[in-house]
Length: 176
Image 1 (spheres, one colour):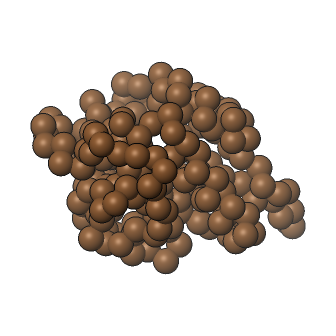
Image 2 (cartoon, one colour):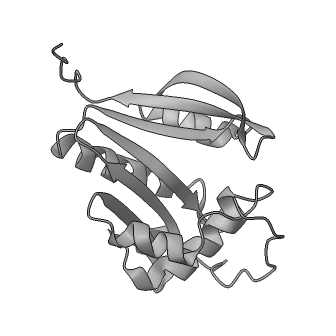
Image 3 (cartoon, one colour):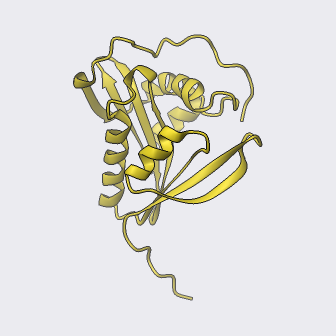
């Protein structure tokens, strides 16, 4: 991960958000800069900045990745990015602005992504989160994810990650 202190620019924030006015749609590459700032400030804080605008443009454009954005008017209230494989999906990033939290935004994003993974025939969904992120842990547990492993030093060699899994169907049996 690249180093550097987070910027004090928080132009992606909108403290006047009303949760009833949210719309959910697939992200466009023009959203990359806003999503990168949210990732830097809300997910990667203290770890260096890996998911910059160029990386997010590539993820948004990738055929096997879905980026869902929750919008309040023109501003982004939250987003989730999931990579899909034949058997496995990986929830890469999930962020919700602080003023939009505790309003069901993250839950609705994850539920949409889980439904899309199930529709695509995926067997399992995987996610990693910081061990100290009790709110994210509770959210994932409430959505049917189970803790599978703790990985010390996963984040920048300093923080433990919790790996979680949601089983959607039995994986294909592999023949020898």
